[in-house]
Length: 301
Image (cartoon, rainbow, N blue to C red; front, top):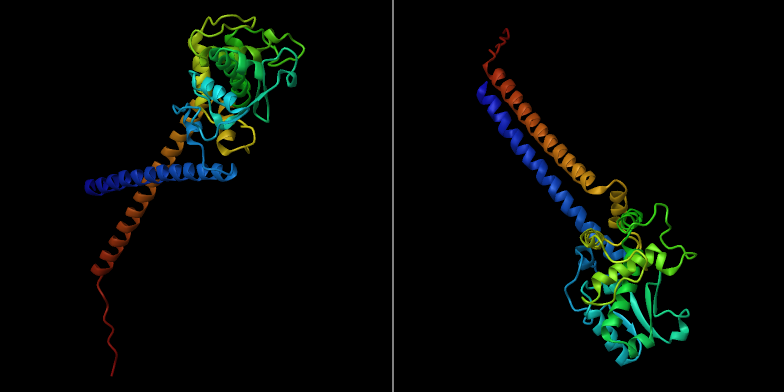
C-alpha cells in the first residue's frame, strides 16, 4: 500500500511539472505570436525598444527620426534632441521647422495629434541657444507622451500629484494656457527631459514638490506599450494594458497567471495519477486472469 501511494505521489509530481512546462511554453508561444502580429499589423518589425522603455541610442542617429527643414536646421534639431536626458521614441513623431507665421500667434512650437508632428518655429532653431531648443522640443515631446502613453488613470494621478482640483478638465481650451493640466504635464516632462539647469516650469502649478512621485509616474507609463500610437492599429498589448489599468493591473495579472499555473499543475498531476491508476488496474486484472483456473471441456467420441 505504501509503495502504491509513493508511486502515485511521484507520478503526481511529474504530472504537475509537465503541466507547468506546458503552461510556460504556451505563454512563451502566445507572446511570440503577439509580437509577430503587432509587427504585421504595423507593417514593420516589432519595435522592441518601445516595449522595453527608454532607448540608450543616439537620437540623431535613429533611422526613424524625421526632421524637415534646411540641412543646418535639421542638424540643430538633431543635436538638441541628443541633449535630452530622457531619450525620445523617435518612431512616434516627426519634427517640421517652419516660419513663425505658419504657427498660432506667439507660439514657439506645437504638437499635432494624431498626425504626431512637432511644428517648430524657425526663430527657435535659428536664433536660440541649443539648450532652449532642447527645452522647447522636450515640452512638445511631453505632449506626445501624454497623448500616446497616458490613459485616464495616469492623467488623474498626475493632476492629484500636482494639486489640481477634482473635476479639472485635462485640456480645457477655455482655460488660460498656464492653468491647463496638459500644459503643466508638458512643462513637468520638459523639466525632467531637458538638459539639467534648463528652463523653469512656467505653469501656475509651480515647481515640483514631489519629483520622485512624478518621475515614477513618467517611468511607469513610459515602460509600458503605447496606448493608441498615432498611425498604428490598436494592438493586443494596448488592449491588455487598458484592461489592466482599469483593474489596477499588477495584482490582477499576477493572480491570474498564478491561478492558471496552479490549474495546469493540478490538471497535470491529476491526469498522471489517473493514468497510473488505470495502468495499475489493467495490470491487476491481467494478473488475476492468469491465476484463475481454466476449465477443460471434454468432447465425447
